[in-house]
Length: 64
Image (spheres, rainbow, N blue to C red):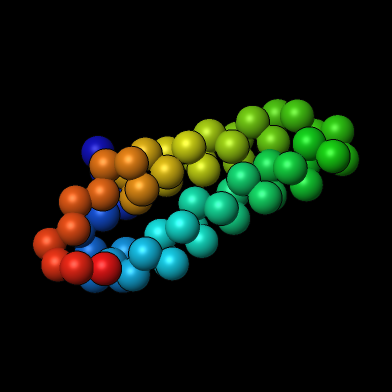
């Protein structure tokens, strides 16, 4: 089961993919600074999942 579809046209611009990866990591740092470690780990895991699918395994059909 896929949670996101990397081949969708929404994810084509590079800036959008990087922004979607950065937001959960920023939120994880906010949660960590407030002492909510469980939520920080959860947000970081979401960021890692997005990074894996949208940055590390990105296969572009056309030039970005």
